[in-house]
Length: 398
Ligand code: GLY
Image (cartoon, rainbow, N blue to C red; front, side, top):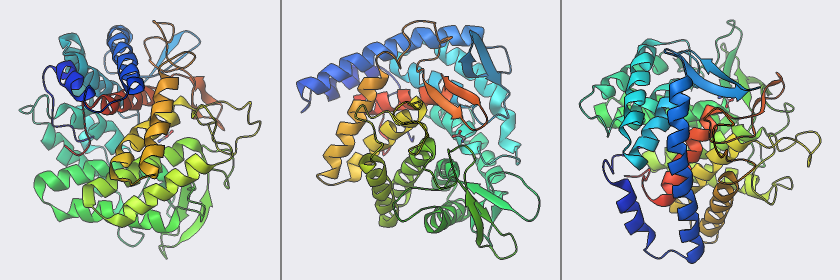
C-alpha cells in the first residue's frame, strides 16, 4: 500500500498503461473496473452522507447502516477507501469527507490497547500521505507505530493481539497486516526498533502459525513464562483445525508485503506456500470466491466471503510481480477471476441497496453469528485496492 504516485489525472495514466501488452480480455476487465469504480464514487458519497459524525461504516444489515467508533478495528477502511476513490476520480467531495474522517481518527495514534493500528492508521493516513504531504500524517503514523510496538514482547517475539490475563499471550494471523505500518515508519525514520519488531513478529509467526500444508491457525496462544506456544485454536473459523478463509488471505497479503519491504526470500517462499494451499485446495471454488472457511460445514452450500476474495485478489496481484512462471500466470488468472466475479452480481451492488457499500456477501464472524452474508467496509477497501492495482494506477513497490 505504499502509493506515492498519481496525484492527478489517474485515468489518463491508467489508460496509457492499459494499452501496453494487454489482451482484449484484459482491456475488457479494465473497462469493467473503471465503470465499477466510477459507480463506487457515487456510492461512497451516499455512504458519506449517511454516516454520523465520529462514526465509521462497518456493515449494512436489515436496511440499516451499522457503524463503529474511531477505536474499532475497521475505522480506517472508510477514509482509506474514500482516498483511493479520490485518487481514481479526483472528486473533491470524497477528499473532504476523507479529511473529516481522518481528523476523527487521529486520536487513535496513542491507542495502546489494540494491535489493529496498522489496519486503522496505515490503511487511512498511509493512503493519504502522498495526497496531502504537508498534513503531518507521518507524525501520526510514527506515533501509531510506537503505540503498536508497546505491545511487543521480546521473549515471545510477537506483538500481542488481544489483551488477556497474564497466563496467555494471544496472537492472531491477522496481525501480519499491521506490520506494514512498522515497515513504513522504519523507512521514514530509520529507527531500527520498527524493523526489528516487524521482522521478529513475522519470523515467529512463520515458525509457529503454520501447518505443514501451508494453512494457518487463526490464534496461537503463547505461554508468557516460556515464550512457547501452548495452544493453537480458532476464534472466527469453523474449528481449531480448519482454515478460516480471511485468515489465509491476511497471511498471503502479509508475507507478500514483508517480502516487498525486506527482500527476505523466506517471506516470498512463505507467501508462495500459502498461495499453493489456497489455490490447490479441493474446496477452492471454480468461481474463485472462497467459502468463509475452507472447511466450512455444508460446502458447497456454505456462505462465501467476498472480503477474503478481495484481500486475496489484491495480494495475488502483488505476488505475481515477484513470482516466476507458471505461478505468475496462475496468480494473475486467479486475481482476474476474482475481480470479474466481485464486479458483477450478486457481489457488486448496483445502487444504494447495500447502503452505499460496494460488495455484498461477506462473512465477519460466523461462530458469533455476527455479520453473516453482509457488506463489510474492508471488503470494499481491498476490492478498490485490487482494482487500482490491476489498472496500474497504484503499485505497491512505487
Ligand atoms: N481482523 C479481524 C477479521 O479479519 O475479522
